[in-house]
Length: 182
Image (tube, rainbow, N blue to C red):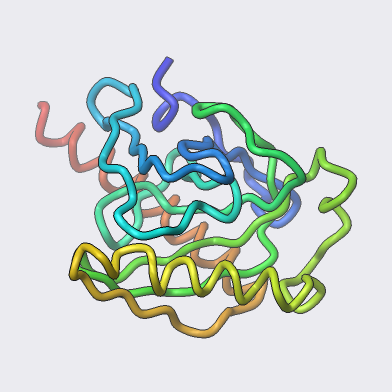
């Protein structure tokens, strides 16, 4: 089983969708899924004195503007092991720019965690948590001499639209690959 290609996305993305966690909350290790094998590769150890503020991964069967699956931050009480599938619901997101270009980060809550499942919007989250998320992405590449800029948070409706566009991007990419294989 390949975590990017073999985990189905539901029709209704507003209620919930699967996420594959690559990096557990609290880690300084930057893992990324290897698109060919489906295994985790260590991309780097973070240079800065920061750690991932929440579980971080991707939404299967999506293709974002940066050429990777769509990134997702999953808010929940505990870190989970890499490659764990967590059912999540988008509550917002933000766009960011760094040395690799622009991409979106979807902010989601784990729907099976009673401490977070009730949140419906980022505006309901504790303000400090939102500052932590933003600050992490502003700072995590600074000691590498790389810039990163974070836009303002957007709402759940836009987050769901971003997910749907990334899912369509994945379908188009797969269709193109199938056409080339003929």
